[in-house]
Length: 242
Ligand SMILES: Nc1ncnc2c1ncn2[C@@H]1O[C@H](COP(=O)(O)OP(=O)(O)OP(=O)(O)O)[C@@H](O)[C@H]1O
Image 1 (cartoon, rainbow, N blue to C red):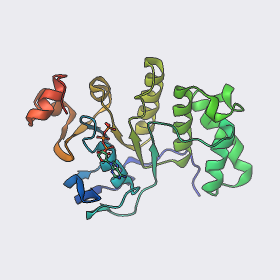
Image 2: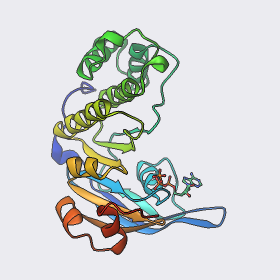
Image 3: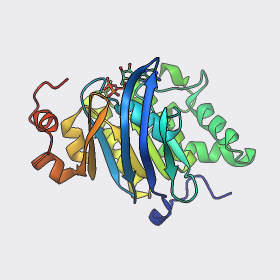
């Protein structure tokens, strides 16, 4: 097995084809048939108001939900994927043990686990907190710990669902720096956010959703300078859209 913290070759990230994917729950259509293709090592930011279907689309893409119709297809081999959630999901163990456990699940040999976990803690500025119970860490520290755990998986694709919505500016900066670090190492980023400034800082391309439908998918510059739908235009102007 390759070392979990070896960088990945960019070209190895397979294209994600979301083909006419819809999602219904108890007879309610929550996501209209949606087609989207993501290729290369890009940073895609999914934006839109509350309830637009951003998380749904991401969970369908990551395979956490099954589409009601259509299909999610990876061209070539299904890549190694990780997902970071708005509220960190951590075990009732120390920060270090959360990471060694993730390595054990990945069947990394026992004698390598601690050193790799400590390297990841160091990388994400958490070395001093290695022995602290993960669940007493601050929100920002917990989110960095989930990123450190994702780093150990060496993902080709990293999904992040509003990872900074509960964080203060310094913690947001730390998470954004980590996202950029993943991207530099060859990981495709797919992330939801409400924060226009954050999207401007991070996006190569933007997916805009509204009322359970994908309205636009454009390069970031085009999206922010000349969005094509009236809903996206209002959103970019900072108006209240719902
Ligand atoms: N697994 C699910 N089962 C049933 N309904 C769901 C499921 N996931 C989401 N929904 C519903 O689908 C709609 C869209 O939810 P989603 O979480 O995708 O919105 P969102 O754009 O991410 O919003 P927010 O910005 O508030 O997180 C909501 O009405 C939500 O209640």
